Image 1 (spheres, rainbow, N blue to C red):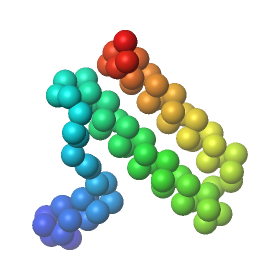
Image 2 (cartoon, helix red, strand yellow):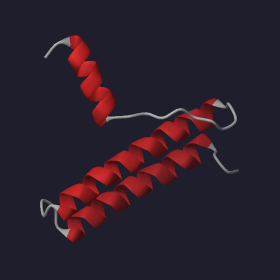
Image 3 (cartoon, rainbow, N blue to C red):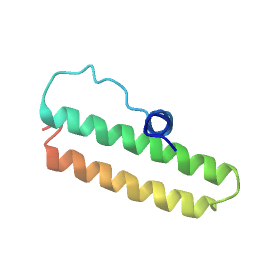
Length: 80
């Protein structure tokens, strides 16, 4: 696959949206983590709906992602 096509594919599969909040490095980092969380939850939901993951496994994976997001929030000092 050519480099240009790979870039288009990456933008399609892993979209990143602009951040409109107040500019702080920790806010930008958390926003990126939040977007990644949402994207992974979407993929897990599709896999569960298609029968590729059991509901229990989907729940476990989403719960683990949530723990990682909470840890990220704590480490970045968001909301303190």
